[in-house]
Amino acid sequence: MRHISRILAGVVAGLTLCSAAHAGPRLDTIMDSKVLRVGTPGDYRPFAMKTEGGGYEGLDIDLIELLAKELGVKVEYVQTSWPNLMPDLQANRFDVAVGGITRNAARLGKVEMLPGYAPFGKVALVRSDEAGRYKSLEDLNQPKVKVIKNPGGTNEAFVLANLGQAQVSTHEKNAEIPGLIAEGKGDVMITETYEALHYSKADPRLTALFIETPLTPKNYLGFMLPTDDPDYVRVMEFAWDQMDKRGDLGQASNHWLK
Image (cartoon, rainbow, N blue to C red; front, side, top):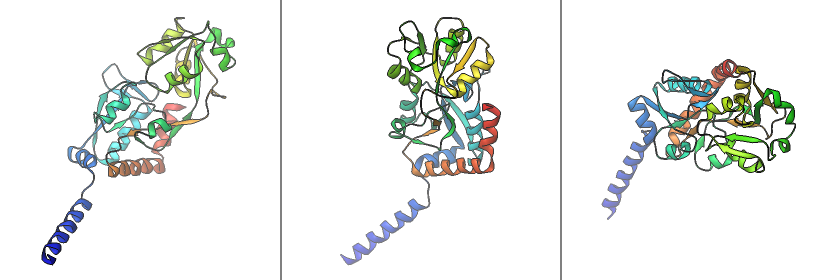
């Protein structure tokens, strides 16, 4: 029996050493294939937007390309949507989700998220000639106000929680909503600071309201990661920290957000 016990102890020790010498399964797969699968809805300026040529551009795209370079791998983009963002990540359709994703407790209860960046608040995008109508959240929450929301994200959650008296409709393509507001097919789009500023600068018919005093407390964006491999999360956090300390994060932010 003592002899058998010694053999078993040796086997366990050997297995422990083997497992310590290898990274987790997701990290191993990424490093072996040299491919990081990146999911994004690709409809949220200036963080991630699908281009006419079929590629993607924006702050998050620049950052994930830098992060992949830090790991020594290439990026493979996977198209998703806001309603499917969490289910697709949990179903292993991609390794990381980007595209202007708000950090919050609900998401962190299900997935990992990289450190926050790009502080923002919820604001309103309205037609410039009617901007004087809206001085407060109560002014937005009126029966005659037509609010257009996109499904599946925190903007929709804010609208449903705070604008129940308004006329609320849903439009599937987030990037088309500012144009609908400008054309008078809706009055208000609830979005975040940077998207509202982008569209108000691009189209004089639109004005971003509540920029200095957002409708919500300050929050941050973050990349979502699955929870199935602590080694993968640790390496991604290290790569992000390296980018931040070298100034890559600040440089990319200045390019897209100023």
